[in-house]
Image 1: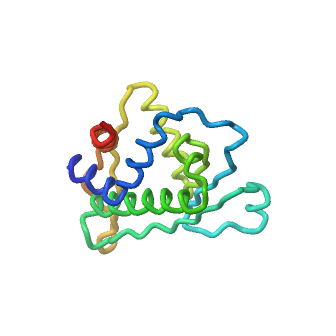
Image 2: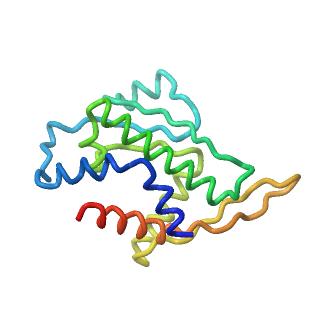
Length: 167
């Protein structure tokens, strides 16, 4: 599963690896060159007031496309791969790739996903590994668990693949 996931996440980001190869020599980015980047994954457009409060230099609204007919864990990974590709392409096109590559961005999560992200982050800090996650899929009138998504395996697979391509 991790190899399939790693492959899916890396589809179409050869350009990123090429870009990283070029920029590897120049690892220092001046703080003054960074921007206020906001990636909205909430599934809702931001109101005028929200935009004013966030005051982004660049706002990327992404509405995930998940195929509920496919095995949910694979569909989520495909959606994630598409989101990563869209973020990288938009950042490159709009001149904010350095911000993305240096972690200078904020992500708006849907609803209580922020709580889940905090719990996962704290568990990772305690254990040194990401936990597997399970999504619930509605089947008829009840929610049933999907196959687990092994976050640590995905992280390791993507990192190893990128490292190999950078060599």
